[in-house]
Image (cartoon, rainbow, N blue to C red; front, side, top):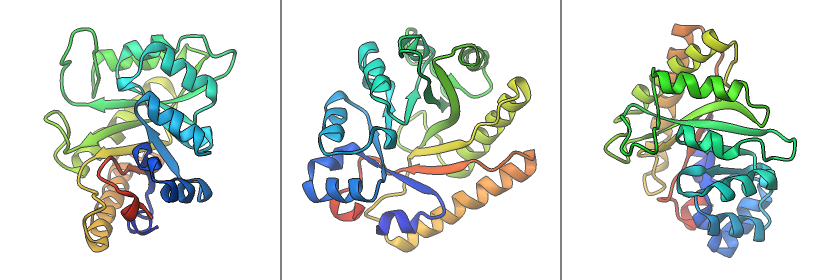
Length: 237
C-alpha cells in the first residue's frame, strides 16, 4: 500500500497491466482498488481475476465502438472519453442504463481531423457537454488530463489542475452541473521514486486543488492519481 498511502489524500487507480501478476491481482481485488483499463485484453484480464466492474475505469482511446459499449454494458464504473466521436459511440445502446463518463482534456489542437480532442475553453468541448446533458445514456461526472508524458500534456500539476477546475467552473455556470471527480494521469508520480518525493508531490497537488477551488469558489472534487504503466507489482503492493 506504499504507493497509495504516499499519495494521500488523493485516491489512486492502478493500471490493469499489473494484473498479470497473480499476487498483485489478488491484492488489488481484495483491497477493492480502482483499475485503469486501456485495451480489450486488459478488460478480459480484469474480469477473469475478479476485479468488480464498478472499480474499473475504461479509457476509450484505443477501443472500438463495440468495445466501449460492451464495457458499459458490463457495468464498469467509469468510461474516459477522449473525443466527441466517443460520445456518439456510446449512443443509446446501453439497455436503458446510464454510464458515468469523464472527459480527457488537453490544451493541444487535434492531431487528426477525425479525432477532435476536448480542448480547454473551446466551442467543441462546450458542444460535447451539451450533447451529454441531453443524452440519457451518459452522466458526466468529471475531467481527466495527463501531465508530462507527451508533447501535448501539461508540464506541471498546478497548471493542469488550474485549467481543470476552471473548466469545471465553466461547466457549472453554463449547465448548472457540478463535476465531482478530477483525475490526473501521466506525470511523475512514479513508483520508483521515494515515498518522500511522492508525498511532496501529493501535497503540491492537494494545495493546488485547494487554491483553485478557493479562487473560483468551486466545491472540492475527489482527486484521483492514475498511477500509469510505470507501476510494477512490487511497488503497487
